[in-house]
Amino acid sequence: MPDFQKQRVQWFPGHMAKTRRQIKENLRLVDGVVEIVDARIPRSSSNPELDSIISRKPKLVLLNKSDKADENATAMWIRHYRGKGVTAIAVDCKTGKGLSKFSSACEEAFGSVLDKNRQRGMSGRPLRLMVVGIPNTGKSSFINRMAGKYKAVVADRAGVTKSNQWFTCSGGIELLDTPGVLWPKFEDREVGDKLAFIGSVKDEITDIETIACRLLETLKASRPQMISERYGITDFEDADGWSILERIGRKRGFLIKGGEIDTLRAATAVCDEFRGGRLGRISLELPE
Image 1 (cartoon, helix red, strand yellow):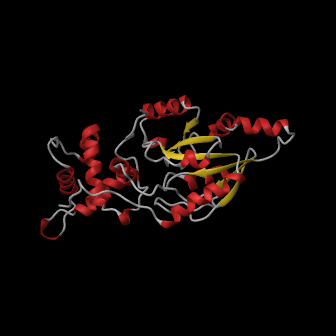
Image 2 (cartoon, rainbow, N blue to C red):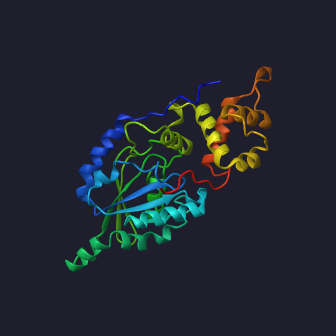
Image 3 (cartoon, rainbow, N blue to C red):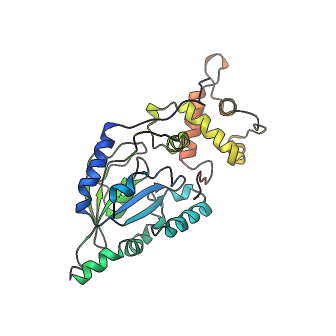
């Protein structure tokens, strides 16, 4: 059994340091910033350095994958952002749900820019926006939906987008894509865990069994019924994550030679099913 209680998720590939520089350099090209976060963990999936990097540029927040998050929690986050003077909307970039509100949200978030353009007789000037977000929050899916052309690379893993790309959208909007951004070190282990839960940290550089164990302990503490309903196990109040994982593996028939439980297969199934929303609509964070 791995010591999943002590391991800390850390990941800072060199290309992400480069991305921070690119954002600063490209800010002069745009009128504002669209930040995409995961609606299940808006705080942990938001780069803590972003506001200082973009300085006074206005920002619009898209709470993506809202179809997998608790609706009441998402509504609380939208009110939270509004209280800070930031426009936020709930969307699902894969299906396009909620993106019909994007134009009106842009009017609200970037109204000062649009007003200035109108006053200068430049009402036809495109609204240029930089799209940012940590890996796997849905930047490419968003751009593909808005551009109507599947030109941006899409994949359900971290670190896919490698260089800046411009996309022209309807409604006089141009989007600048950037590679994913992640901070140098996860000082808060819970933040690292949550990012690993949703797949923003590459599985190849984490221990999938460790992540699954921590995810199961998180769910046991907050939503034990989801474990019971999905995996058909009960009476696990005193069990740790590893024991729950083993029970899931045995229940699913994930066995290898000698009848030993294939915990790697069980861990992969648990993480994939959580990320795919098959455990139910779950939000792991609420506004403070």
